[in-house]
Amino acid sequence: MSDQTTTPPKTGIEIKVDRPKLYKVILVNDDYTPREFVVTVLKIEFRLTGDQASRVMMTAHTRGVCVVSVYTRDIAETKATRAVDLAREKGYPLMFTTEPEE
Ligand code: TYC
Image (tube, rainbow, N blue to C red; front, side, top):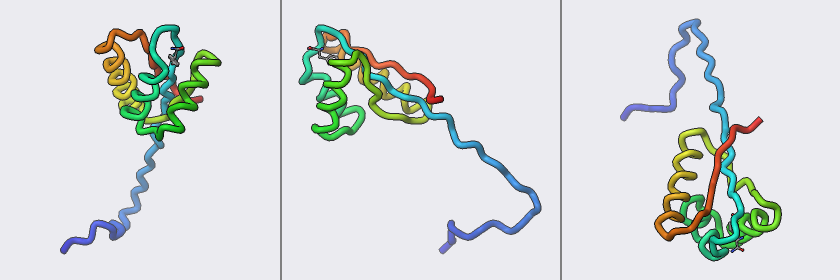
């Protein structure tokens, strides 16, 4: 059986790998999307618990926006797109945006 965890032989070559840049997914408030639906999307697409989803929804509702979570760029964009698609299927104007972390 091969051991995937052994250290490779020393070659004198040092490979440095940067940590990937992280992107915030931001939930944007609107006047039309039902609160219950926002919570459902946060639970399904961002795997938040009911409690976390309610808090994030209420923060966006009262302050205008709320950071949902941070991911690598591809994952942030995919999740935001999928969440918006779920809302459009129901005819709601719910919006998620992404932006790089400082
Ligand atoms: N403001 C919406 C309402 O009162 C609920 C809502 C909350 C919508 C957060 C979007 O990001 C949002 N029905």
